[in-house]
Image (cartoon, rainbow over all chains, first blue to last red; front, side, top):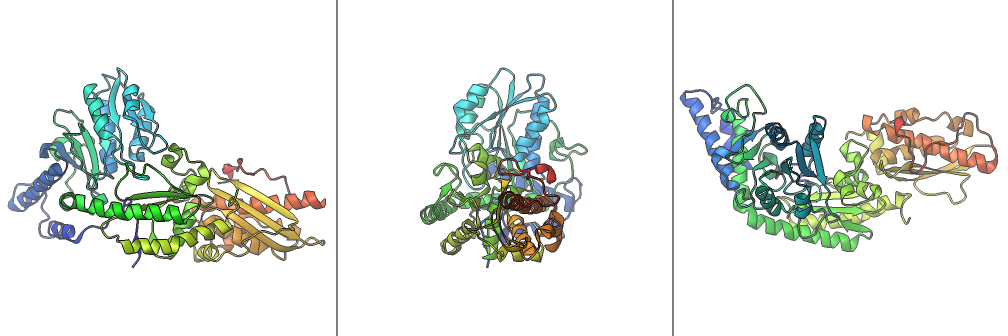
Length: 385
Length: 145
């Protein structure tokens, strides 16, 4: 059996989730917007799912809007808020390590007359809440800072940023796609106004996400053409997907403490053993303030795609921040942002753990990884320089 | 990323990895920024035939495979014939590369030319059609992509 170490990319839909979904793709296929019994069943499943998602983040069901992905949720939150509040100001604060769903959306808005401040992270991959506060201007209308980074797993101080946003009466959005279902999220306690989440990051299906919008925050419709999602997001609901996501989230939250502790122990073992075994390796991102399932290590003198291909040959599936794996010529913007030179950013390995990983997977990794790194170093003209 | 079987073969079992201590010419091209650096070593006989070729590469699967294939292709060839090896012929020999990886094949051609240029200068041999390599560490010409 191959070892899957890429849970930040996507996760397998849990069997108990699939079981909830299948009837809605079969006999229970009704359109929730219709009036007869078949439709009412679908509508009921949809609203139960809304309750489940709301409960998972301490929101109310009326504050949950289902979308097609975490990316759509991010686009919607940022663009709709910017348009809604443009009379008040056109300044947005974000960070330089957001997912491209937020970063490219900000670039889009910059071309349309908005100004964006990108707060830099420190070498540990952390944003300073004080830097966010310093960047606030009279015309600031939105702060969008991710809860957890998708590449290096660092947990940003969203509690502090939420409190700052509240005291300055500025809307606060967080891309929590990597955090929800993995670390506790409480939109009330953390003063979050808008939050993006995605079903397939916590063992739900792909193609479904949600945006939480706090009651009292006016948000314009993003997809037009129907009354679904209280007129805010038109289009017939992906009922099976939504139900699957909600079930997966409820399960993830109920198992969170136990799973986080278990995965953190495996994570720490990988970090300790790799750093001790492989010379010239370094951990990217804060050791303490990171997701329970994230390991991101750079190896000097080697390139990430080669590393992934050789790991793949040994049945180990992982990811890298190298340019070659992104389809562009530039390595990860996150690794460059924490101050890695280009060649080290190219030589990164991301391992993201999940429910299916066990200690024996670390044994296999440690059996293969050191010799693979050495093999590539023996081939590299940079080795020893 | 879909690589051909030939690319995977040359990546998994690269030919001619290493250095030649008494190389007639050495070429170093690429740029850490885009993630590929190739060092090519050529041993050329007095009558202008490539007797041995070796490489060291920092880069992706395609970079390693093109280095491996290029060194295979030059062995036994005259310097003039080496000049006819281009990124296209290396790529064809590998049964093609994904579009985003074509620049790796350019790097192999550049590495060969850089090694020939070094040889040409050291040995005072003029090579028809050879130009001073434009590409070196830090100034890899990405317009070839």
